[in-house]
Length: 388
Image (cartoon, rainbow, N blue to C red; front, side, top):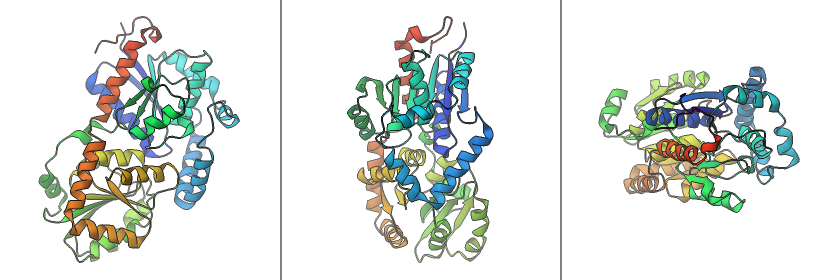
């Protein structure tokens, strides 16, 4: 009797889709160690060269022309699953994908990126595929690209997204409000003072974590570091430059002249540790970064959110009281000053985060997905072992 086999599709157009997939994989391994999981970057499955080109173009647009991305996002937000645009997208690599799925014979498919979810959902609706399909929505907003009648279960991060799906005709019974899955590492309780000591930071200073995303798309990071480094206040900073080596190198002079402690990193895999050491985070509004901060109950300052899904994520964070949005340098300075001078504000933000996002999101998502498998036994091939 073979183990449960799960096929996970994500995409490298923004690190969040991959991070959500990896969070689920980690939780599956913790809950059901025997599970076999295959994780694919869906565009890389077709053509790595094209995948790199699309990824590079996406990063360039959101860095250099964010309003253009916002226009595209909003102009496609209300298209239906059977629109001409969606049908054209679903033709890309259709046969290759079908052949690949059949060759693996998975018991379940999970998608953390909407395009591949839409194609698989259409294959299910047309009868070409009979495998349970789970879609993980990695933002706090509802866009039509996520919505397809062939999806068996939606994993969502907020009641607003759940309500948005219902308004668009999705059966409420197929929606699971678990929180956007983040690595179980973020649910660990770490000692705040010990983490700061290990990082070479002081325990008596308000600490800001500055994160620009994996590809450094947050604008004006160097200015933020200069501001934290030179401020006449008992503060300090942690800056994560991601894969932006130019940014990392440009901070040499800032660190040399800093009156306040600043530590910097390239791409790291211990963001949960850095968040533990921090009193507030200055960041972009990617769905996974926001969810990680919510899990750690870390107050957020969202700086110049990118139009589209990230702006919607930022509005959600502000609406639930877990953070503030700054659109200018002056607004940023004002918020920083406010948080330093009034700790009651950050305390309230932490409570709001705890209320909106109680944690263990990946674990809850995995348990909901396993329940789906039990409910649809006819979809499993003979011999599959579903025992937990």
